[in-house]
Length: 408
Image (cartoon, rainbow, N blue to C red; front, top):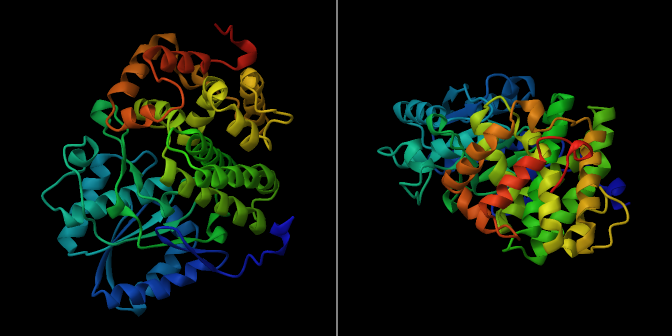
């Protein structure tokens, strides 16, 4: 295959809406980015990160040196957790404002970058709060410049205009999508991702698969979103087993990172629908639930629901996961069970009951799916009618593995 001829040490500049520096060693481009910040008269920045990955990955050594070499002062908010909250964003933005920061450098996975994007909005709109952004009472038109240094191969947020933050007191986990939060520059350096744990590696890759599937089958899909989705799934299916076997396989990490970026570009164009709309209430209620695991739990039932309406597309793009699909509507159960088997083979065997959800929580989850700001938009893009009954059925069928379910 053509992938073997790619020089993974040659840093490419991939132009999506964002300029993404991509490849082994791309983190060194932070020096060039720092020079560009100085040219824009940016002399103080807010760094947004988690508590340790920005250091353990080695990214901070490069960033710190580039900032100091270019006499850019910085303050670091390093308290972002998985499923970041509006409180994280408000605190980070306040720290940045008090310091006089005029740009944001976000280092981490989706949580840190999304929190950084959100803080960048507040730097330019100091009288606003994260709650106003994520409860949709304020629509931002400007944000401070954003530099995203991505440390996982799943989110795609380094190449898109999307961010997700939780409103914990309401169990809301809304998404926003605004042009003003496209990063000015992003860095995808697979060498920074080797410290991901085996579970993190799998979960973030499954997140990228879901981005691809949903973008390819949404009502506003296009040949472009289908093409990028198909390639993302192919690459993940091919290279994820290599990384599971050898976490230091940089060629495999390279193509998983590329697949993740493709997934981000794909849903930046065609958005998402069922799986993300239904997962957000799960991890809003249980903050400890990893996003990729929640998606994995729901995906087989979502495939069963949408396959009859999108069989030709899914029959094509799912071929690396489920063999011998013909793209016929009657294959829905085969496709769903095949996807579930693929997930189980990766070691993802949990279903909703394993994560503490039961029949008694379904009504609450359906209500959150319908009332959380922004999720109504995602549901409106699903290829089937997202009625309460449909949503309830997806949750119910996700309680247990298909082999244990009595499907109605």
